[in-house]
Length: 58
Image 1 (cartoon, rainbow, N blue to C red):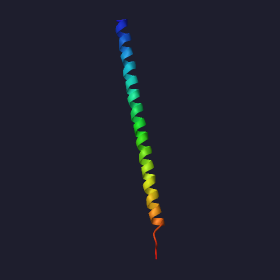
Image 2 (cartoon, rainbow, N blue to C red; image 1 turned 90 degrees about the horizontal axis):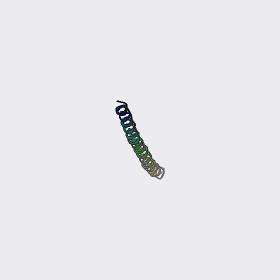
Image 3 (cartoon, rainbow, N blue to C red; image 1 turned 60 degrees about the horizontal axis):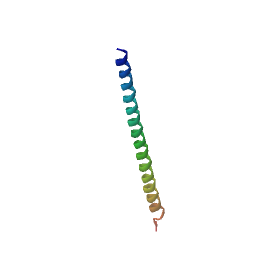
Image 4 (cartoon, one colour; image 1 turned 180 degrees about the vertical axis):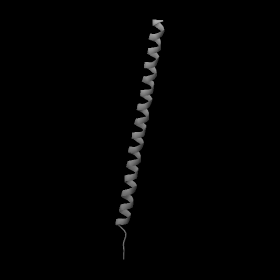
């Protein structure tokens, strides 16, 4: 019976580790997506700002 308890506890530890690794990968992916989208959005915003700055209102 003791051996069965130890085996069950080890399986929980492995499952928890797998979930934590998966959570870490998901968080890293979300952070990377926000950084990439933010960089692209900043470039687009600066492009539009340059366009409107260079307009000739004559």
